[in-house]
Length: 523
Image 1 (cartoon, one colour):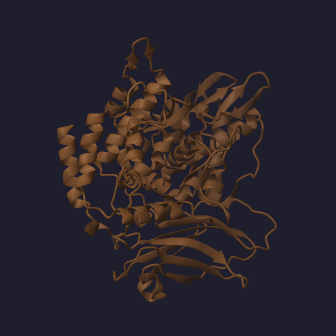
Image 2 (cartoon, helix red, strand yellow):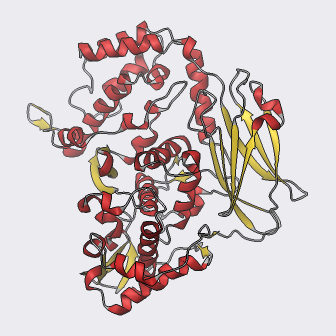
């Protein structure tokens, strides 16, 4: 603990009021005016004048158009603290729905008080349109479909031994598929090269026949093979341990068989509370949020979506409802809506869908907490474990005025094994349940991890009396705890580090409010 406090205090000297960067560019809105013209609002929500030159703005319009602006050539009002610029975009909305994704300062030229809120995505449409559509197309390639390449891929290891379909409880691996099934898979791959638009349904089927479910599963398999054959990501499925990547091609991660009604259904847990349909929307979104418009490596690909999720996903609930989310509507919300996820299952599902779309290993499992069963994720190729999917946007790790790596909220496999296997605390004849113990350990671990990166949110929780702050560290809201999460000595040592820092608490509060306002910006 002493070594921890020394680290905490040394960080406090770095995190003084002099280090706050109060320039903060973000995109609050893109809109169509009454003349059917398209505009983007760019705002400096900080107080500091921006003098950096050659900051870029990259705008993606649907799947095939992209434009890059140098902000030096545009209306300069955004440079003033609290001021905005309105930028005309050279795209014609017409009478169609469009997907727009914009990123500002992709090269990180400007030091900002928040580096996560630089992306904007939504579905935009003319008010004359009677209804919304969710259509996507693969970007065009200078390549043609070659059946021989894909036949070899289908028969290669590890895919042929890992991809599996379930026929009413009987697993059939790809290497044993009948020729007709393999021909169907090839036809799905060939369809990708045709440039045919993929239209996502607005409603969810109650049940799927074998052919319907198998068709959806084949779209994911075809997409995975397409990425591999055309080298569209800088990693190969052969770079990973088979045990780490097998879930990508496991049909049980998509559907479950209802033996009574003889239909396939989406599984709320294993499919991640999302409408499994096609990986294209997630793939296009992933391309848009990558630095420098391409995938650097798997680490950056995963970090980019975790940072985006921390900045934009708005967690809410639908009490008493089993709700499967539309992936396009979550990634590209329509006007007046946010990037909402209605459960930790949906958070996990969105991240699983992202990884499926990029051939990245991801694994989902359950964890029991004090109020029930929740979802957790691991990224095995990075030795990262997200103990509870909702930890991703825990305010303890908001990057308010300083960088807090998203890895700070993660556990390594070793840390996770120690966490999940810790014996329950007992006092006399009363012991923690597994759910209470996990909740207790999670509060303790997250508090210490947050302190180790000098979390601004810990300062935000702190007040003169320290009562709310201490109640948080003790875990007072969990009346089933047999011991405080942090005992009095640990609280005292941790608080000593906070008292030595000279951070401007008013600034922390302002940045916290700003972060929340950007996160929940009504689109």
